[in-house]
Image 1 (cartoon, rainbow, N blue to C red):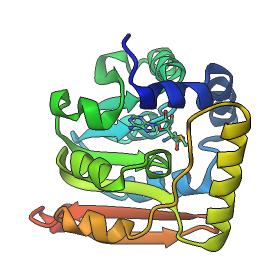
Image 2 (cartoon, rainbow, N blue to C red):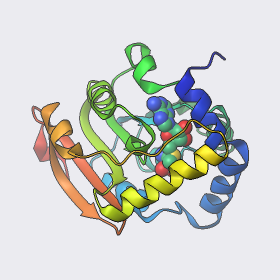
Image 3 (cartoon, helix red, strand yellow):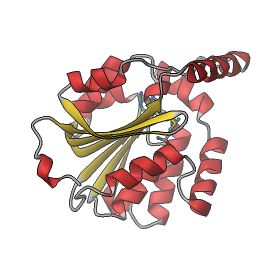
Image 4 (tube, rainbow, N blue to C red):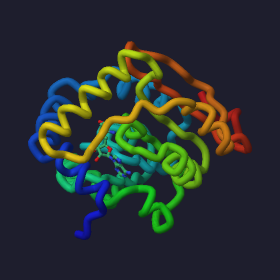
Length: 221
Ligand SMILES: C[S@@+](CC[C@H](N)C(=O)[O-])C[C@H]1O[C@@H](n2cnc3c(N)ncnc32)[C@H](O)[C@@H]1O
């Protein structure tokens, strides 16, 4: 397994211990983050039967697991952290989804040309891990046939403070990983040909669903 610089940084922070803790919480009481639960609930209102899913930076695979159980026919999870990818794959196998799931290692922006398009593409808490928002949005929307679901930190002073503290944490532990509070996320997604149809806030996060402008809107909801 070759390793890009971004994956090396992601692997340091998103390590096996964190992945196993997250999986334990998920098994006990479902997705631990409210923003993830809101995104999944919103996705479940769509006509998911037979749709395909690409989950970028999918962590332990909560979105694929939930949507495969709700009608999605097949999913691909792309992860920069080998530990998260491994834990996600084992959990999908344990639940009997091995024939409907694929797992790809790497920085999605680098891997995108080799990856298939999907009806639904999700990035749950991933923009804040990546320095180049425009590149990530362009690469991921180019793989989206229909619906694009994202969560990301709101542009608020307190998230800038949290991002700064996260940077100090990584610096003290000699990790190159940083947290990014991007501005103008909606504008960047719109500029790539998508229109929002679901937008909610938690205290820290923005949760949004978009549809490709030339998509058939009457299937949604
Ligand atoms: C905060 S975690 C969120 C995980 C999961 N989506 C969730 O919400 O539970 C961010 C994840 O994105 C992954 N990631 C960050 N940048 C990535 C990239 N460019 N390509 C693939 N994965 C990436 C990290 O390895 C990490 O597992």
